[in-house]
Length: 213
Length: 350
Image (cartoon, rainbow over all chains, first blue to last red; front, side, top):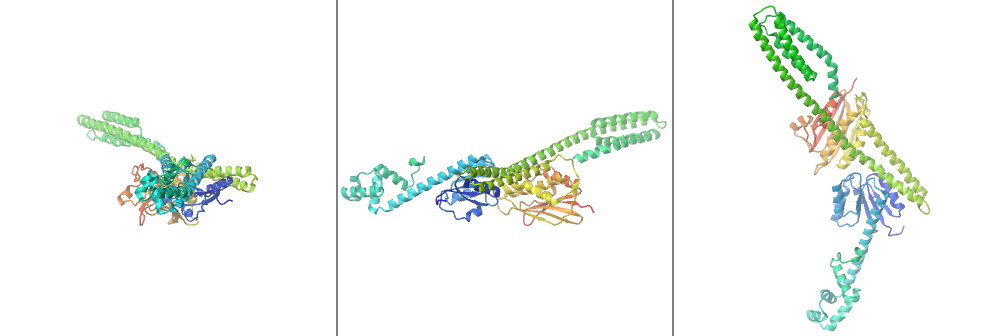
């Protein structure tokens, strides 16, 4: 299988459900890893692939809901699809509010489950992509010299070259050179681009990144 | 309850005959003794006994008959002072009237108690069925989920290019195994709720406990209880009603699981034991939930005495009547270091 084949991580204490899910997900082309309990899962070294969790709610030891909270506490972003034999509305609301992709009752419809898993995997792929983009952006920002960073900070605040030159006690020509370097190193074509990149770096990307909508 | 009613029906002819004979004896005694002796007051006893017929008309009839016999007796008695006789008869009739009134009140109160008790027994069965239904739904939904997953996987393996018949075959085998498993659950439920009259058969107690455990598995799991069993080998088989005894065990297990499910901290261990000795078989359900105070333990088998929030306090009361109908005893004790032990014994015939 190719290295970046998405992997579905199944945690369910019922062996026949586990085997059925394993076969089903493999038949649609995913890689699958199955675990009988949360404890078993935590011993597993996860490969760095796009992935999602298919969690049973009630299991011996920590429940699926407990595990969701644990993952949130360590900021593990793996998307979760819950499967449960006896769920109620408050439970489903709690799981979805805590960020679960879907909350399905057993017995589920095959298509509902596959749709939920596809959605979860897509979420993970998008997250990984934007994280990779952010990492690249950070690398580019780090390559700026101290002076260029200063100039960039003032540029994105909307200061004019003349004002920046006064702020930093530089000649306007020098500011123009630094500014050109910033645009080139940050791979920004326009001032608007640069402002967007600066926002992303400061973690304010949420509302401004159209590719996420 | 039902057993009580049946015993009554059998006793009634004797009860009726007893009443008639008593009244006749009192009548004769009242007639042959002097008017000064108020033998007729003894009709009061007959009226009180007539309450046992559970019918207001019977009480009323006995009161009226007693009054009539007192008057006839007055007319027939040959000896004694008539004035004293009138006073005595009047006193007797007042006593008979008052007693009849009280007996009617007692009868009405008993009728209300009987009705309330049978309603509660019904409600408790309904609640138990509700709990059981949730449990069964879960037990069936597991294999069904397996069937859905394996079945659709099989179709996909066959539709793939090239098809993968080996994978498809394995998936279909799992479908069959899961369907069998769902069938087993239904079979167990059928046996549990079968509308059979109380039966008397040799019971394999371990078998019986394991059937209950299979049905309460999700209850146990839901409350995240760790289950252990300790069954002696080759246990003798007591005689009893399978379904009723299962209800008792079900009740003890569900109680223990629910109590431990509410714990904030500490282990949730459930130990179910079965052993024989001293001419009896002993089943125990030991939990590490909350220990009850001695005063609470004394009352725990009483009806309406619940230690559970929302409990009706009928489960253990019904369990006790079932165990006692089997000639056994049900008991509760504190478990160390925490929790409770509930259990019962059943006698073994030699």
